[in-house]
Length: 112
Ligand SMILES: [Zn+2]
Image 1: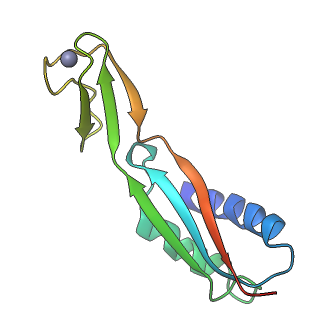
Image 2 (image 1 turned 45 degrees about the vertical axis):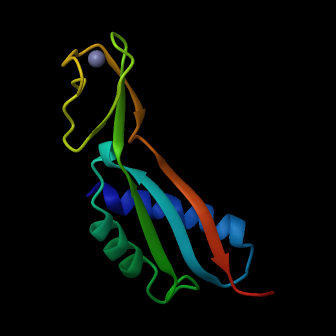
């Protein structure tokens, strides 16, 4: 399950940034093309952080819709399926402009 190894990396990053302060919430942006199930990620987060200083912190996952831009007609299409076809001219010469994100946007830390 690759959500588990992702959680492990998030824990590493969060611990480095929190620098001993209590973490209330971690905000994450995940592109829909990443094949990550947010609920599974949140589940792993809780499991992995039991009995650690991060127990009780929330993982807030924001899902980012996938967008492609057509090189033929320049239309940007939001796609709900990972099918890379232009919504305007049905061309397949497209580039992905959103949906591959995986980043921590904010940490909510307790007051020092
Ligand atoms: Zn097009």
